[in-house]
Image 1: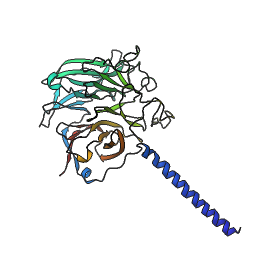
Image 2: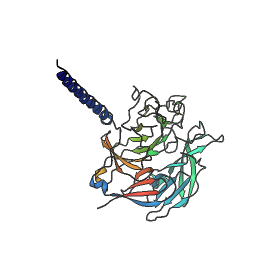
Image 3: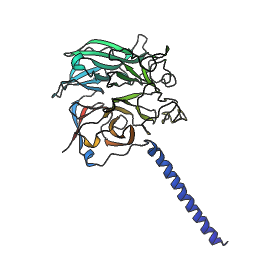
Length: 391
């Protein structure tokens, strides 16, 4: 073979090898996104999303954690620094409500979520989650109910206080939701003890719980016949769930939770199931080292969706309102990390894609669809915004 022919053949072989290598790289790059979520798509260019404006509804320099509406349209807001406020319908300045318990404020702890009983008109109960300190300085998540009389809470009672394992100020959870049968669900994070709490049903933390509205444990909770288990546990293997909502059609409870560096998840909560943390995860340590080599394991639930890199999700709402026809049937999730609102498009119980529909909001703490059909967004250090679609 001549030197010229040999050189030509080598060039052709190298070109073929490069093309094949690039093809493999492209396929491998696409697989994680097609298989699940991987990176969230950039902001939609649809005219509808471009015409959505965030109108300031209530200015507040605190961290507005929870939102709940009374039947008369008044909005109750919890602030993580231990304040409860009421914004009366049609007004722009909120009033403070007294009578809260002693709240252990610090780092991620404080006054957290708030929820109005489905039968509030007849019983007057309001539910709160908050971080509570024991007489040794150890902190845990507590669930309290109370009634509102004027500007004061009355009849306060803790209906669940998780066991306190340490003084750390992280991973308290905590969101609240009622299902269609009137059971109360709430989340408690792993309290920064990932290798101890989430997989152990004899310990609180890293769990989703279910109670009767008065704090009694339902007879059909999954671990009621286990003498050593925490009887209120409904599911386990969670890291730090800061989103919880009832599906408007099925009545199922959906949650999302913070992963570490990557691995934020959306989960459909089922009785007695193990959601894997930290044995399986799509995330890694903040240092970049591995937590686990496993993303799947028999007997552990897979997320409906996960984010990598992490968006630090907080707040969650199913959209049913006719004010946002292009969003109906999908989930909106807030991003603390990027100051965005992310829409997860659903097909039944399957998540199809995630896309940013609003950004430049700094740290989005919560998202709720109000009784008036508008979407309200709580933003750290700014207050509550209402999303308005321009005509």
